[in-house]
Length: 236
Image 1 (cartoon, one colour):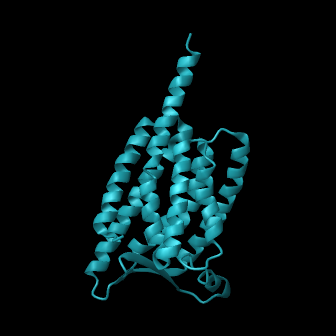
Image 2 (cartoon, one colour):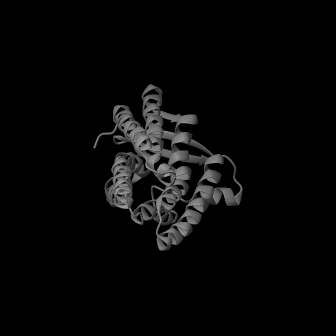
Image 3 (cartoon, rainbow, N blue to C red):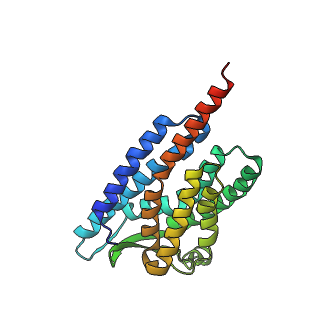
């Protein structure tokens, strides 16, 4: 698949529209963090669209600074903490909530690890094939900070599995069927990227995850219908 600034901006627009609709139709406060998720992906994809444009305008085909860093902030820091939080807030089943508590703690630790790496790095982006590859070069050489740069999320990264558990695992635990569809879609996309396009894993997987987040709208509508049916049943 050929990715581009236009593809990123198109998905950003679709996610923005879907997110606005999800927020407008959200039937309860506990579902609001979930409803906001497509808007987060809209911002992330808009940022990547700008990164594409910056790379195209760069004489050496590489760009660093705010754009790549903000994209990586979404990809490696926000999502592993926010996704389990949003699903936990939407969930009412006590057993699933306890598992989501553990995933939320794990996601928070992953986010803390990656924010440390991000703050200790110069983040750059360039094109590999038809996708964006993000790299992080360490600023300092302290042993603990340097160790963070040995963990490559696009390669054999031991953090990839707990990252997967915190994000896709949380979605799979949702009591809302369209959210579980989103989990399956994200898992399949990750497998395909690992097999066919590993060097650009972060960019491509986030692109597919943003596309899959459109299913959140279905989840919000489903929850709204359930709430309406419950209210109708209880009415005298």
